[in-house]
Length: 321
Image (tube, rainbow, N blue to C red; front, side, top):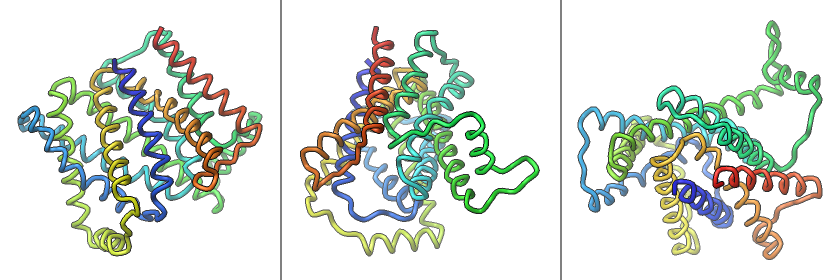
């Protein structure tokens, strides 16, 4: 059941990504501002308590609030990495590291592991997701790969060339984002194991909302938010925009539900299916509506993505059978 819910969530997220690319012409240039606008909506999740009223103990509430704050911090580092570079560089790093970190953390703190078949499917899903999500892949020989690492991180006794410092910051922010994503999902899995799903979800969202209020206490951050609000434009098709936001919220709730039922690391590895859905949607739309969405697909890139799709399909088949 959790497998179907997770894949459905990633399918909806792929559609939301394409819709956002079509709707949003103005970027938010502050990671804190982005996190603010995502987090401020968290308070509306309290409406779910109408269907399943529940009040946590003080200890349970403290864990819930911590999970919400961790999610807000994750958003800040995630968008900081996206702002520093193209999504095609950030997504593969975060997409590969998050399930790996999740596997380690869930094994240590939750005692979750894999069978040999599941572990092989886990690796195949990660690799397939990377191939689908990147625009192109260059295969280096070992010596060239080592030279690239030294250029970015520097020799043990030497400095780092200035031109490679932005790349190092990108890798650090992406890796931090992946670690925080993994930490959040492992912690929320712990919450769902000991608390009812709706109650744990809603009270953890309160942590995100409180984090948003803390953001407003910092003068510089408050000025950035006020400036963006003043310059923001209302989307031309407001009803479609609201529909997309509702679908995004539904996908997030479904993903949390999947986490409550299944293995955290495997659910994160299934993000490769989202890249497949995204690739197929963009490929279809760029062919049928080239004026709306355009995606360059050379022969080598297309072959790489097809191999990635086949690997993701193989990984899913291994989990289902």
